[in-house]
Amino acid sequence: MTTLTIILLVIAGIIVLLLLVALFTRKSYIVQQDMIINAPLQKVFDYLKHLKNQDHFNKWIMVDPAMKKNFKGTDGTPGFIYAWNGNKKAGAGELELTAVRERQSIETEIRFIRPFAGIAKADFTTVSLSENQTKVTWSNASKMKIPMNIMISMIEKMLAKDMVESLNNLKVILEK
Image (tube, helix red, strand yellow):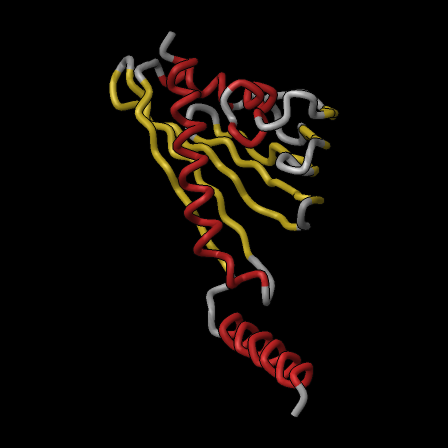
């Protein structure tokens, strides 16, 4: 066998192995992070339900200060869409506010266009722990197609880290 044939067989073997791993790897994930914020529930909830406020705490939005943004609808109400088109790190897509349960939860759907297409649910829930303390839970869930699903563990770690950083930013803002 020639060297080129051996190289091609090794590459084909690696591809087949990755596809086999992808067949037996889970195809969905959910990442959830909590933060206790020393502020009343109503203040925290009112801030979170306005998606434009994510400009000030969401790490992923903050990676491109020159990002182009478009808005449709009334911020803070279901049907509001926050669309973005940014640099390589920010990518492009849109975030739609799908449900608001007053003082309880904010539900959104993220539709990514680039760097890769995909759909995720990103929700916030709020629980009053005391008059001036609120627990915020941020969750992100999605499904990934084969063979992209082999990256789920890496994506979960990255999301968890970035969500904690964003929640810390939120805490600083709301505790002023």
